[in-house]
Length: 147
Image (cartoon, rainbow, N blue to C red; front, top):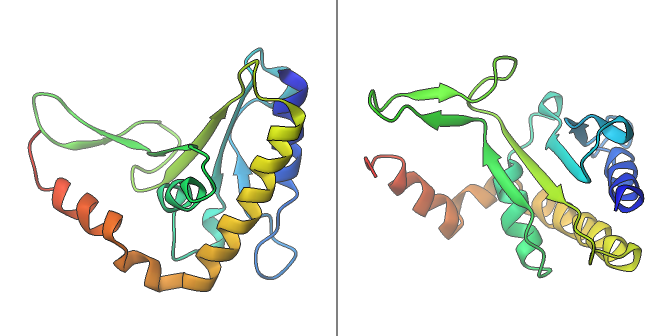
């Protein structure tokens, strides 16, 4: 499982932004030094992309992969205020993680990486227009609720 996680991490690390130089992703996990087969990353904030990691999650679903995208914030249960989830990241950022289980073979990991390439291409093609997709409207409506 660690070898498959390393493969996915290395492939994601190698992906570049539209300029072909700047890394597309920032790796957040401890890499091969960690003891868990998990890849945690975020789209490189230096690229100022018109989409985020939750958008990436939705694009990956089109290839039948579910990669969890998260906001780096949570709602305080009694004060109902948004708080940063991590002390070293602002709450407006997003991230994603891939948990590598024993049934995720290297062949499936290769397909996941191919799907990442396709999803990124799709997001770049849609750019700012992606913010008008239905899931964005739903999440905007939810942000005003107390539940």
